[in-house]
Length: 243
Image (cartoon, rainbow, N blue to C red; front, top):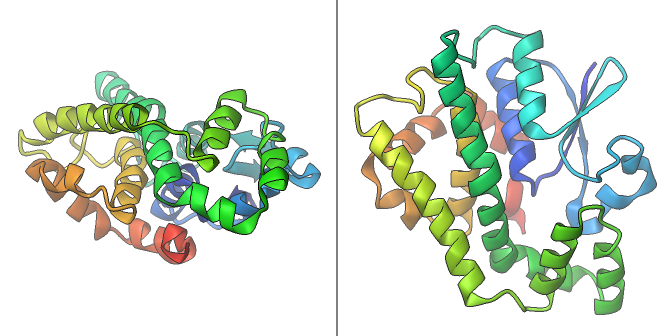
């Protein structure tokens, strides 16, 4: 049985859960509580040296990074297909996965810090202990950002820049979806799976106007929320609504 190490509070975990449910693949879920810093405990670091979620363990081998995991799942379980056969369409799909993973996701992550993550961490931990736990993280950029978040030091300019990055990608999606297609590259694909958890998080943290003001993106998101895999993902992982 493959195992997925995931977190309720992780957009990237939701992305992999959605792929697993689209393919109806059995797995054992192993929850990693990011607010309790399970990700920097020795047991989890033995699974993922970078202390990041999610991690898929299949055949005793660890596979990190949500984009890589979803491509792996497509390789081992090609039906139903979530990757176009046409090479140009496949390149287009990977371009959208990149935009949502490398541009939108960090920006949504910063907005999430402001909306609830920093407050929840400060609620759970005294300042000195919290700083020590944050400094145990492997990624230095994430350490610096989260320290500034819990200290209330993220600036209005940083928040505005993050929102702008999201809007630029959504503007491109609006233009593309405006041609009448249902999904980002025509047929439903890993691009839609990569996008959906980011838009779900925007909804959760009260930034849904970014979707609501773009009719084609909003229609796409409504289609997404009716899919069984989307519904199963948020039944399995209640996400930040509990925080």
